[in-house]
Length: 351
Image (cartoon, rainbow, N blue to C red):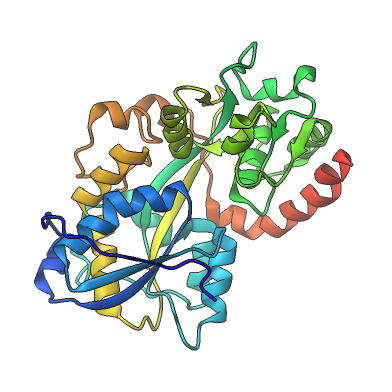
């Protein structure tokens, strides 16, 4: 069942739209499933409202089922009677949807905008929905914390006992952190995560929560914790909104790219309008607007992003240089094993 639905309409002047949106007279109602909270607020302003301005006959309903895993579960439950037209979620769960036939394959003939995407964006979804945003894992920390963390290994400082919010698997942050800690210990997640699990087990007594609610930023701002695992884009935005109270740290030991894909639901009730929205979301204007508003790195290689905004994203040259090569399809195969080890060996050690 859809947990949140907001009908969005706007009378803004029409902005530039991709060829598919201009070429078709689309109308009716579509439902977009994506992340709630500040993602919804900013995606609405940067992408949904301009799309509606260019396509005034379309009504867009925004809904969220929570996490990406919950989203794909909702779409799976509706497979015989889809209630969602387009879905944005992390690549590990959209890949599951692709395998199960929940999403449509996309062709260049129907979506010429695919030719504007970076090779990484096209590869993310294979023949299915491509990457619509890039991001990377950071540590969000309270600027009042003294001394400030300067590296990933600082999480094990004794003065941080009870002051950490760590998102554990199946949250994708926990999977990314596992690969990062394994590399910090000199290992390779593709061969083993034994070193990472050992170190995370040592960290467990310092963790206040493995399920930050509503999120790590709120816990920092409320004084509950001092450090939380987080995504760069949201942390950059919260840093601005909190006047620097929350600040991001990109660990020098390295970080991991996170990819969100945009997917056309198989059997969508309004496929034409859903396809038009998907194409617009991947277009240069939409990618530029969302990157400059919320610091998700663009996947459209032709989007002209303001340098000041690009410098705060996952694709800034100095940030890319610190990314750990991760194949999310490999991690998908090992995810259940990693989840079980976290539950038995890491989370259990905190009790």
